[in-house]
Length: 311
Length: 311
Image 1: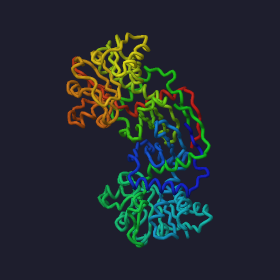
Image 2: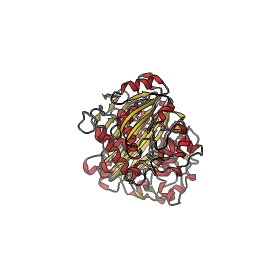
Image 3: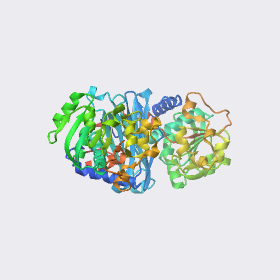
Image 4: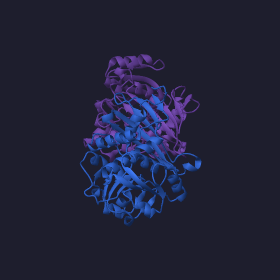
């Protein structure tokens, strides 16, 4: 059994985007096994357990990932993850990966794949609501799929937004008001909000939105009116209904699972698409275990590992 | 993060029995978090993901365990397991344990706890149906709770039964017919059978049965008549209905979840018990994630570990 520690080193983000795209295509064709993730609540956070089997890569495994919002004050990341990989022929654990940064990357890659297929423009003004680790990951991954003309970013904490803006040197980026950030072609929300931040009237026709932040019951970032104005694609039906951007509007009776236009996998394999250039499209991402397997396959290749005795 | 490899060394089985008993008591009082285990099917087996949080031990974690019946022909155990332990305050993974032998032990301990509370006799003739690793674990754990006067064992493969009998030196043990093995005070079934092996007419009044083998949909070892004649306690309602000894009779409409007398946890805290000395009692074990946490707590104490970089 190998333990992989520096899993994010020298990873080619374009290769990650392609691997995630392929995993979503497998999902769209119903060729994966992936029970909805399990949540366990802890006193100051929670952890999620995400098993899956991805036959196209002959990979099976489980990611264990926590969310502890108070961690930064203790010098630890809010989200940390381990992935255990099993040999599909014998079930023996063959690898354990530090998957903290891989989790950021594979979520960014899902956003990039959604933007590739659902953004009507290939040259975009990118609006970022939230400027943390996941905003960075979305930006990096998307930059391999679309031409970013300009970035407008907003954070509840304007110092964070300015710091984020200063760190990006290869694109024109400004820290702006939330309303101005929403006036863009491709809007990416990555906050832990439990109340809508993005108002429908701020969003122009034809915008594609990656709604990334909501990943647990009670979380939401978008005005539910946007879900009605636009069409909603999800990464996985069961997970999105339970814990995605649509979970609060569904629990309030404002949105119904029947209104979901399809999954990203169905979009990737060409079964579903946006209907017109003017339509607003929303990708509701909760994060899939098959994304973790797909990026693990890349991270395990030619990387330094520590040999552990097993069984 | 520590990796614990020789987790079974120098473990005091009596201490394990007490830890498992306490975990069941917590379960009986509803003081644990434990979603039903998730199953993922692989081409030649399956794997199960078992998360839990046990507040009384301040322990949270996940066990990943496979079942690959063809493994022995490749020189590997059928069942192998890893447990990941998280710090409950921050969610950071603090330990990974080789849990293969711990899985045997904690299942044996659940059987010992069930026998302690449900066997009307404290000095017993022990009948074993199946003579593999789990039969050995049940025998070892039970020997710390009850006086074993005699052991009668049976296996589909009589060579295995004879080998098992020869290996035990401290008790009187014989390899016998399946019918004779069932004529005992405490009957333990540990086979992977998908059809009843133990006929009701072979079992005398007042017998306690540990039904251990059935742990996945489609598996069963007992004549469903026994479930009707006796009373059934389960380790966990949801898991037993899905994958325990009662799963096939329930799917056939022969047994109903309403007929379950209670959980082992409820027995341990005194809420439920056998009604008379003559009653047949059955403990339907599927294996709980809280058992894995309880034994991990013991296994991590003062044992050699390998330090791994994380995060």
